[in-house]
Every structure is written in structure tokens, then in C-alpha cells.
Length: 180
Ligand code: ZN
Image (cartoon, rainbow, N blue to C red; front, side, top):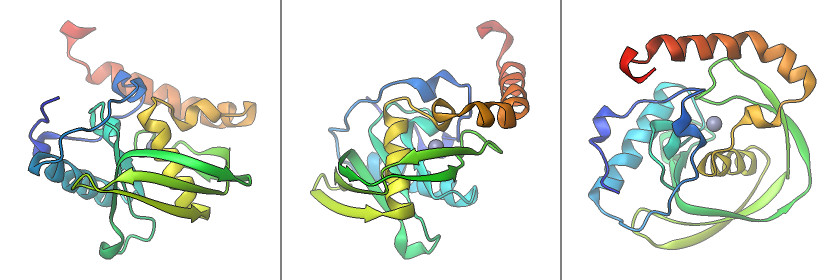
């Protein structure tokens, strides 16, 4: 797919259908991909997030960025990521830049491996635990159209009902009339 001008990309929010698509593998590693990753990191930092996946800027591509410390040297880009050797289990409250003000307690493996490519197409693997492993899994979920609302317990549904309805109403109101 031809990538759009990165400067035009913005974070898309629930219930935008672009968040629900299964994403395609990235097979072209060029300056446009570098530009996309740089833009995603900028948007993530501006919103004080720790991760952002390509579908969150409207693109159905298997790519995400993350930085769990907020330090400039800790920016990371993962292209075509696969989670493997997931182990352990931990519950933690998660947020998502595409679900402002929504908090969901998500149970996930507490440790995992990730295999991915960098912006040059070079394969690498890392092992992570705690917040880093959680972030990798949350972002990889996005690439399969999965979001934290899919993990909500009955208590989470009640706690988030009002804000989800507000997000749905805002989304409807912002759509151009012709596409309704
Ligand atoms: Zn998210």
C-alpha cells in the first residue's frame, strides 16, 4: 500500500472501524516507512502514551512504536511483530490512546518474547516482562483489530459505559453527513 503524507496522520479513536481491521505485513522498508514511524512516535509522545500501533493512525499495517519510560533514547519500532513464548499471568489496568479515559483491567502473560523487524527490515528478537511485555501484547492486539474493550469484565463495562457512549456520540457527530 502507498503510505500517505505522515504529517496528515492523526490518532483515530473508538469506534472508528479502522481500529478493527486485521493488518497486512509491511514489505517495503523505505524512507516513507521511516517517516511513518517518526510521526507515530511524535503523536504517541504528544499524547503521553507508551505505545501506538499503525491502525491507531488509520493504517492497516503490522507496525507499532513504543517507549515505556518516555526517555528519548527508549523509542522503539517493531515491524511485523510476533509474540512468542508467553508465560505467567498478571492483571493490570490499561488505557489506550484510541480510547481516551477508558480503563480496563486486562489479564495477560507477564513475560514474552517478541520477534520483529526494524526499519531496515533486519529481524531481531527480544524478551520482556512487566510493563514492556504488556505494551508489546497490547500493541500487537491492535494489529489484529483487538482492543482493550474486548477484555472488559462486567464491572469494567459498568465503569466505562458512560465514557464509551460519549465516544460513540462524538464519533457520529464528527462524521461528514454524506457518509452516515
Ligand atoms: Zn491501544
